[in-house]
Length: 448
Image 1: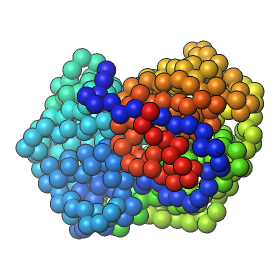
Image 2 (image 1 turned 180 degrees about the vertical axis):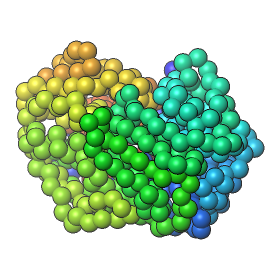
Image 3 (image 1 turned 120 degrees about the vertical axis):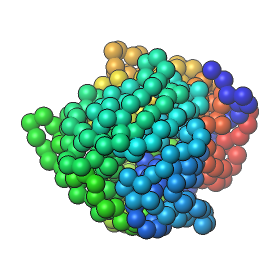
């Protein structure tokens, strides 16, 4: 499955430590939601620090197509004039969500509660991803869906004229499914209830409160119960988007693996449901600390300081997966450099990401001389104690996180590592290679 014009990129050991302070792009999850809630709010929402990657720009375009006024007023600075809950209009054309599973699934929740007809598609990767996990619970609102086999895009939706509230228990831990149900519930009278057996990232709940909705969370025998009072008046509120912890993972792991390095990543979101990687790296012995902790837009934020450390293998429990689901590929790179064996357990959800991320991560390791095995839904990595052979070309499968993980490995390996296509990095981390070269003080990442 190839992209029309692949852009290979190669990374090599920089020969000197990585050093410096940097900011990473805004949190992708929060950026998507800021645009969507701004479109549903009454008044004008000012957003700063928005991630201007392709995925988020697709959400901005979709909100425009649904009748909100969305304008960029400067780098990362956006203004959204909303239409109020239930006020979105029918789009005149197909909504193309590009590569973004988050945008597609959350948008289906929004549309389900509005009496509109819409069609949605995405790129080749997104058209392979399962949407049934959201269309099934959303059908309870009264919305109707027509999809390709297996519930895949392109699809058509007719939103409910009189939406009903949802009462749903998530079969798999998924913040996207939970969020889609809550977004649909905004337009329905009464109470929408979602139960999740394992807590997933709660940006939707935090931002709903920030815009004035009544959301409560309680632990029950069945799991974490999230309750939303329907048909609230959402009121425009400023949103300061923190740096994305999933993007911060790449410079942080690079600093831990390149001898002598010290890197500070500023203004990172530290939501406890997103910091599984930090917890895991600390268990591996990483010199990783947080400075300047504060709260912005309802989210905890701080600066992360990472220094070179000889890491040790650990077992990562399955319950941690939802808080670091996007970070396993780069954790596998850290595990490859560590001393001893790292076992990552309960990774079934990785099989349905932008690529089969479990298989792609295994292939990334194998291509570069690192011994690994997959047992069921577990990935076992035999560490090289800082002697990753490298020298391989990694198939990225149109997956930005596999591409960046391969390049991080190249910085720490004995021979250069090539990502067969780095074009997709721009979906989440525009300017990644330039920024990393700045820390290295040399062209450590360049076209082969």
